Image (tube, rainbow, N blue to C red; front, side, top):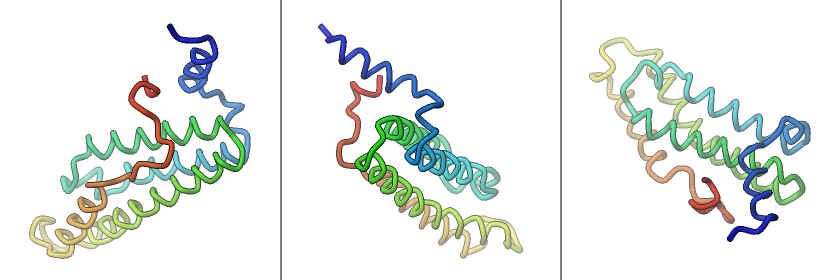
Length: 144
C-alpha cells in the first residue's frame, strides 16, 4: 500500500507546474532545458552521425526531468543540485561545441577529417559516463 503522502509526492514529481518554474530554482531549471535543446540542435548532432542520438536524447531527457523536479523542491539544496546539473551539462556542451565547430569548418567529407574524428571521439568519451549519478538521484521506482 502506498501512503497518501507518497501518492502526493509522486503526483508532484509527475506534474511540475509553471509556478514551480517562477523561482530562482526554476530559472536554473530553464537554463538546463535550454542547454539540452541547444545541444540537440547543434549542426554536428543534427547533421552528423557521430553519436548515438537516441542514447544522448535519453540522457538529456533524464537531465531535463531531474532539473524540473528539483526546481519544484526549491531551497538551497535544490539550487545546489541544479548548479551541479548545469556543470554536468557544461562538460557535455564543451565537447559538443568543439565537434560542432570543426564540423562547420570541414573542407572535405566529414569521415575523412581527422579533427572531426577526434572531436567525435571526445564527445563519445564524455557521453559514455554522462551524466554522473548525482547524490540523491531518483530510483527507478520514483521515475514511474
